[in-house]
Length: 336
Image (cartoon, rainbow, N blue to C red; front, side, top):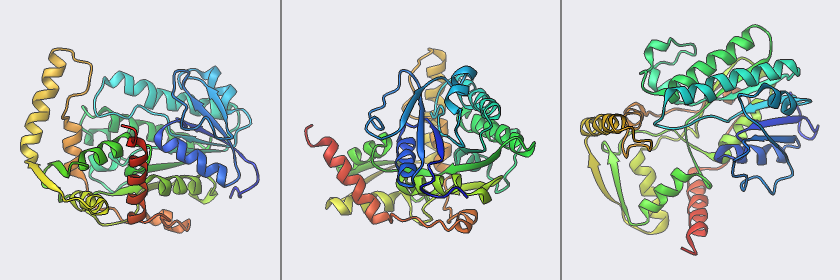
């Protein structure tokens, strides 16, 4: 185990993102030297004031990556294309080819540990608890889930060959300060109204971002996590509607709900996606099949047994997490 305060060097790719910035903060608290890999065009406002070394480079440039991972002991790979919509080629270039190139750079520079941040979408779209899957079970149009699956396989192939000690982390529905989705939800709920795909009665496996960062850091510094998969959730059994009602209750507002049948949502998403493809519209449709299927496949997920073995317990409980989100939102909108 890599102990706190030993100044082990850790590289975080996608460090300027919502999850990445929280991971960097946690690693600093644990006494690690932190490097951040970001694109040259990235907004680094979330990490610019942290005492970390910011490196610029591309996941598809082996020279960039060799220089960045030099003298690094642990790599936490967060950088990815995460979207409901887009061309499969772009997802493959970043999520699959970029991961392979980063692994090759790690091997050349003798990096010991590699923690790949995947997605619960791999589990949800496969409807299986097994850790190794077949591609045929993933709908081919869902490029995000498909390429995350392909990247997982590459990471574990390198691990199985004895080239590097790797772990896979699958975050669930992550929320918290700094997240655009959290902001949009709070903005919507400010009026006391919410439109649901379905009845709002699905159990959503929420994970507060600080808790997720704790879990990722714990996995990264534990040798016993090598070769294992971790599904990270706060382990609370709460429906989508109950979560939104909790936010409204904290604000002292009532929640008025509008429900769109899941079958109608599917038809709308199918129609919109085909229209956008026909007219070659680059932006994301207002409803997508990925979003509809995500709602359909959502389910309660208890605390991961592998995480429990590491001594993990979410430190921020749901009520405190909601209060932190509301406080952040109020601060972000006070001058608007």
